Length: 134
Length: 223
Image: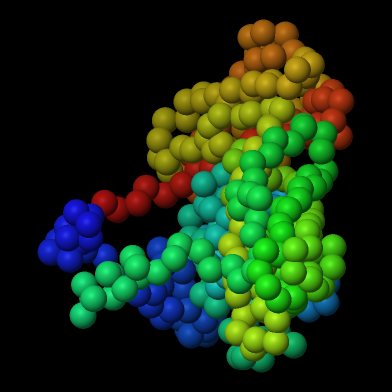
């Protein structure tokens, strides 16, 4: 009861509702990525399982995930990624419900050292809606 | 209005799971270093009056697969939700959620039961820091990775290779088979670049045999 009372009267209480349109830290909407792509290149990273990637992926996307061996997936593409490290990296997985894109983005940022890594809000779902994935 | 919502939510039962009662909703497991997969089971019983139909099982990660042993459970019947976690390159503590979607008797309402699996996955070799960095223009001083073997058996470094020219490195054995320092030095820090050291070891577990240590020269960010 005390907790509820404090919540009700606290001036900086967080909202109790979930706002699906709010961007989390490090997230980007497809509309914004398309603006970037109209001016320069973007490096797409597909964080879904390899089987999904093999079925279809955004043109030019690289496969990287933790479900399979991250290092083994990274090594053959590392030279290409490191040569493009000054470009924005956009990571996607299945939808907002999967955490794989956030985890891969974190690894690229904190472990591999790529500066600008973003998670695509909505993931493959919005890419399909935009016709960028079948 | 928000206060009313708060009191309404507080008054709801914490979990609504229809006729199914789980013996445990949270499972904690420890995998072994060589494990590729971990299997676990959530046991439940239908202690309602109606047959419960399983509609779906949602998992929070593509690394997880799960299914029940049957699709319908009569009143009083016991059941199992069997799940398999593919470890891949995950290490540390992993929290994965599963949601069992069921339907009670002829009801059209779906019940959702949240379950949690906490998996402790040991890493047999750790490298700190994960990333060595120099700022552009910084003095090209030597910096070091520390490689520690946490596996029960000793692991030795067999070979180290660098993906970039213009860097020199040396390996110092601090404690044989247990602790190594790998010193790395750029010739110059004039422009940004990324690179990695590929560290080959004699670890008996194939998936842990090769380790990567990353380094970069980065532009200073404006504060």
